[in-house]
Length: 351
Image 1: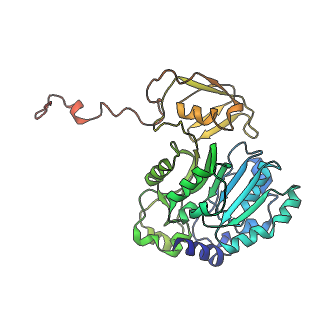
Image 2 (image 1 turned 180 degrees about the horizontal axis):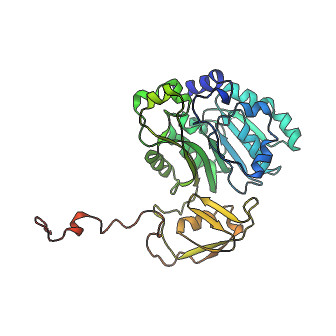
Image 3 (image 1 turned 120 degrees about the vertical axis):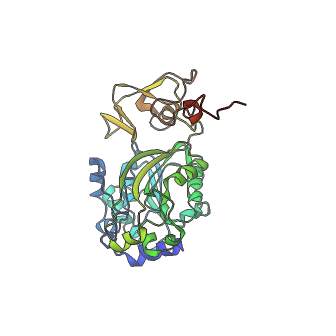
């Protein structure tokens, strides 16, 4: 049902973003200047059929090879094409013929506007990426904007993305999440599915699926609660709460399950374009230029073994371990059980 309903909803039911019944597939973030300027160079017909829920624009894209999963009418692909520049390339994958027709109709228009041609679009199901002839370990960045919720086999998408990324590459994507698992009887509702709600992952299931695919430490970048303004849609959903969130997941083999403390720190040089004063790794790591910034081993690796490395100085190594990094990841589980707080109580025993 998922693929057929997506094609029908985004190809025939919706004529444009104004036809959406909720704000789940809408972007409210204020774009930085570079993104705003790039959007001005995207064709109006392409922008009119945009259904994303976030800004899928990570830092430092110049020269990168990017894959856009569920590229739709092509707004993100054409935006990113300007940020990767003439030495980079963007490939969009989508399964809805009407959306692909809009994206492809304006290839030459955008090439003339940019002064170079570095975009192509492939028709295909993102659940079956292995069938599209894409070379493994060939992409620096993979993006997706409010699309993974629409597919049935979400583990297949994350697993394929991991295979397609170069070591040190990242999956940077926005999507919709639920505070609990959506009941089975709602998942086949065509409107709830098309509005990116009934296919939303429970955040705990997302964490498990991402890690099983090889993305050991998912990092939240931004999130916002969703308002369900349509009365009929709200009545069907009851008390389920939804958020739109952007995550970055790195293909790095050395990441650990917890954020471990090795006494390390980084100093940001202030050299990433558009982020001269502060570099935001994620929602919990805003790294001010010139300041010694303590980090856990995973954050160190995300900076040292990726395209960000030339923009940081690194202090320390992995020789000494000091336990879980304070305020990052889980604390030690010991000392919290009832037996420890009520030692000597009636019935207490040892073995």
